[in-house]
Structure formats: C-alpha cells, structure tokens
Length: 134
Length: 134
DNA sequence: CCGTATCCGCCTTGATACTG
DNA sequence: CAGTATCAAGGCGGATACGG
Image 1: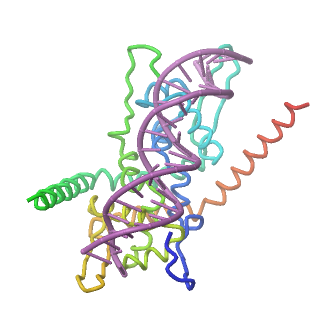
Image 2: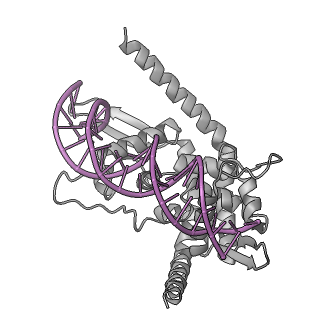
Image 3: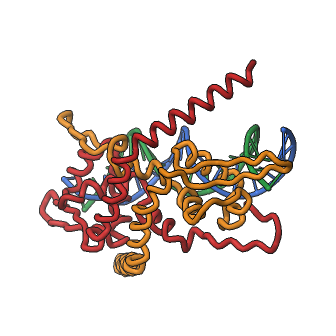
C-alpha cells in the first residue's frame, strides 16, 4: 500500500468508482459469455452448458445465480420430470445490452491494434533482454 | 466441464467472443481505476498511487505495464535524479473512453436497481432458510 | 435434466524489504 | 521517486461424486 505521508487523500475508490461497480457486475469471464448466450433470447441450462466452451456446471450455475441476484437474468422453472429450466434477460438486463454492445464494437474495431501493440511491446522486451546478456 | 455427448458444438468461446476480449483488456479492478485516474489527462506514478485507495506499488506497476503493453497507456520518463515518470492515455486508449463512459453511465443510472434486486434476492433466500428449519 | 457438495491445486494478491 | 524481488496466504476455479 501507498502511505507515504499522513496527509493522504485517495479520491479514487473501488467502492464508489462507476467503472468498478460496472466490473462488479460483469467482472468474470463466464458472466459475459452467459450474457452473450442470452442476448438473442432465452436458453435452457443444458443448452448453455453445451454452447459455452469449457464451462463447468458449477461455474454455469454460480454465474447464473449471480446474474439472477443482480436482477439481470430471470429463471423460469417448468416442474416436469425431469425438470426444464429456461433463463432469459430481464428488462434491466436488456437495458445493459446497448452499452455492452458498444464496447464490444470497440473491441471488434480495435482488437488488432491491441494485438499489434502487444507484439511490439514483447519484441522490445526481448531485444532488451538480449542487450543485457552481452 | 460439460461433455454429455460427443456431438457437441460449443459456439461460444473465451478466445473469440468480443465480450471476453473486452474483459481481457479491462478485466481487473485496478485496470479500470488506473484508467479512470488518467481519463482527464496525464498523471505521475506516485500521484496515482496516492489517489487510488488501497493500491500497492506492485499492483500499480503491474497494471500500468499491462495497459502499456496493450497500447492504451504511454509512459514518459524524465531522467532527472530522482526520476520523474508520467503516464497518459494513447490515442487508442482515448478511443476507448467513449464506450467505457457509456457503460459507466448505465451503472450510474441503474446501480440502485441492482442493489435493490440483490436485497430482494437475499431476502427471499433467508426466508427460505427459515422455512427449512421449521 | 438440473443442479449441490466437497476437495484440492494453482494463481493472484498483498506485505515486506531492497535498489538505482 | 519509481520501481523490483521475494514469499506466504487465500480465494477461485476445475474435477469429481452425489441428489431430487
């Protein structure tokens, strides 16, 4: 931690910053994939599990519960045997769609720039390492 | 993992989904706070450390390096003694500002809804627990 | 079919100390 | 001032097994 002196006035805080609150909601890698799976309509539990590469039941359930708790996703149970469960976005969840898609658009437009920057950065790093070992 | 049968066609993947790539860039809690600290202009290393509540030097450096590697932030070193280092957004970083702020706006507008949904969800949970223990 | 419970390894993070 | 090095602790996520 930084506490170089007592007259310390942090004005940027995890608890208040809008960006942080945003991440608090869509933070995890699985959250956005589940969100993505639901953006064109409702889907069943097993269906999502099969569509999302690499997800476990544990993580799928946990992610859905969190989204449900935050009011972004709703769960609809049909109590047949075996049971059938469908998930869909709530109106609140749908209202998040537009800003999320704007950000996705940025990624589509600029991801290659990011990759290029990474290549360049890593390139400089290895040439530096090389220079050190002479 | 889900692999209920072999004819399994996951079409949503961490590596390709735009949302995931987005998170890959702004994933961590510190990333967005550093980004926030820079959105109104450049800032010095120590200054950011003091402004961002709870961040350690290690995390600040690590976050800045990652943002630099991704081409969103640039580092300017003035080699005096002691040295002075300023960080600022690159044009690429600035282009991310608009979509990020849209999402922040959603959070400002709807965070209370999310909190309310959480309260309601937790409320139902405890009444269920109560019912079970009768 | 739709989950929960448990265990366990790894990776991230934070604390601390040191350096040019 | 602006970092780097090291180490320990804890949480997250994966694997696995079981239940309604």
